[in-house]
Image (cartoon, rainbow, N blue to C red; front, side, top):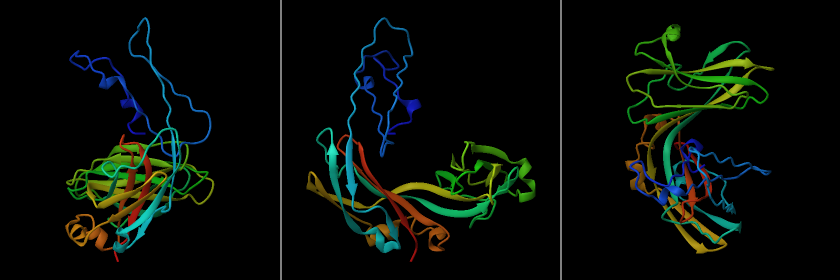
Amino acid sequence: ASEGTAALRAANCTGSGAPSDKQRKIVLTRTKPAAGIWDLHLLGIFNVAESAYKLRVDYAVGESSLAMVEGDESALSGSFEWKLKEASFPLAPSEEKSIFALNALFHREKSSVKKGEQTIVDGPLGKLRKYDAAVQRVLVQTGGSPGNDIDLEILECAAGTTEADLSKCEVVADSGGATDVEAAIFAPDPALLYAIRVNGYAIKDGGNFLADENQILAAEAGNLTLSGAAPNFKAEYSFTAEMMAASAILKSPLFLSKAYLARGAIVLRSDESTPLASIPVLITHK
C-alpha cells in the first residue's frame, strides 16, 4: 500500500480546526493485486447526519523485460523495456518520481527448528549480532518451510551477553502468524546485541527454514533515465565509478567480504507517484 491502512484518514479540517481540502482524499495503492472480489470497509469516526463520498477505482497493467538486477558490481548499469499493456486512465512512468537506489545489506541463512523447541539463527555476525551505527533498521523475514508453523522473535541483549544468558534478553520485535512466513523489524542500538530466535510451533518434517536479514541504511541513488511514449518505454540505469567509490553500502566490510549482498530496487512511478513496477536489485561483490 502507498500507506499503512491504519494511517489512512479523511478529515474536513486540520488539527487546529482550519478547513482543509487536501485531507479529504485517501489513496490506497496495491501492486500485483490478487484476482477476486475485494471488500473495502469505510468506517466513520464521528456520528453525522449525512456523509457523502466518492469511490474511484483505477488500474494499470504493465510488463517489464527485466525481472531482477543481479550479479556483481557491473550489473549496476544496464537498461530494460517497460510496456503499458492496459490502463483505466492515461499514464506514463515519471523520471522525476521513479528511482534506482541501494538501501540495504542482505544475508540469507539456512536453519532448522524442531517442534516445541527454539533455535537461535546463526550468521556471519554470529548468533549474537552487533550492528553499526549507520544501520537505521533491521528487517528479519522467515520462509521456505511450507506447511510448518514457526514464530519469530528478536531479542535485545546487554553488551557482553553470551548465548547462555539469553534468558536475560528482552523481546523487542516478534511475529507469530500461522505459517512459516514471518517478519519483524526493529531499530538497533549500536551499544547492544541482538539475536534472532525462531520457535517451532507445528512442524511436520525437519523444520528447515530460511531467515533473511536486511540491514537497512540510508538510500543511495543511482542514475535512472526514461524515454519513449505509450505504450513502450525504455529505462536506463547506472551507478558511476564515482557513485560506487562514495557508496557506504558497496564499501562496507560486510559487502566486501561477501558475507552480505547489496540490496535495492528500481521503482517506476507515475507523475501521481502510483507504483508501476518494482524490480529488485541484488549485488554480490566481484
